[in-house]
Length: 183
Image (cartoon, rainbow, N blue to C red):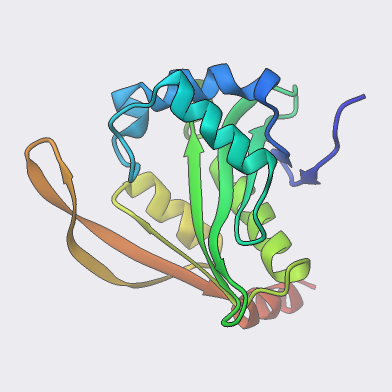
């Protein structure tokens, strides 16, 4: 019986399962094209990825990670809420769509919307923030109601030069107001 997880229009977020998702993670995180815009882009060993799965399977209370599935149950990526600060009620978002055939098809946007709904509706968070140097991810944030808050100059070293990162965030009040406007 498949795990239902958190559903959106196109994607579903489910708990990561080592038996189902580890091999994809290894493939994706060792592909320079896929990791080009990620914070960690130097590749991972099997042991490093197994340790990651150990950590997320024994979830700490300040970190949530999900596997992203499409409508056919195909594993296409991972998404998370990280570094949750419960006192100030904020988290940092992370996302990777590793299956290249899923790029540009709306899965990232749907997954971010699902994660945002969970963060505000279930966890009671106040703010989710993220940074990116990926133009496609900027569009995802903007479609999901995140606001551009600034630029972190020369934040990432890639391909022999520094790259800026755009900073985005959404507040619970913005998200809830958008829900009322849609009714």
